Amino acid sequence: MTWLDDLTLASVIVHVVNGGPSFRGNTAAVYDDGVLLRDVVNLDEDAQVVEAGTRFFLRERIESIQLLPAEAV
Image 1 (cartoon, rainbow, N blue to C red):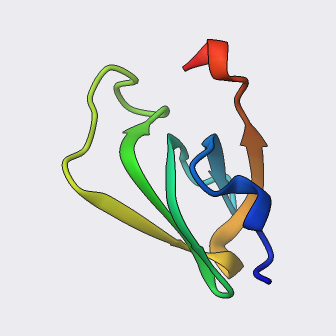
Image 2: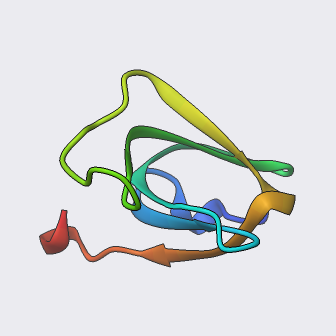
């Protein structure tokens, strides 16, 4: 069991450590060392621009993760 099994296929906001940017995305996969998101949006830049592909966030770089209710996506 991984540290974020409950988040598989959930919409989340990932807050990066040290005041880094926050990202909204859909959880594609969860690993012991991090989380892979698809349909990623950098909320600190332009919340309307969806990045192509996927983005991996290392567990050590994640400050917190917010779960988004289905109706908020």
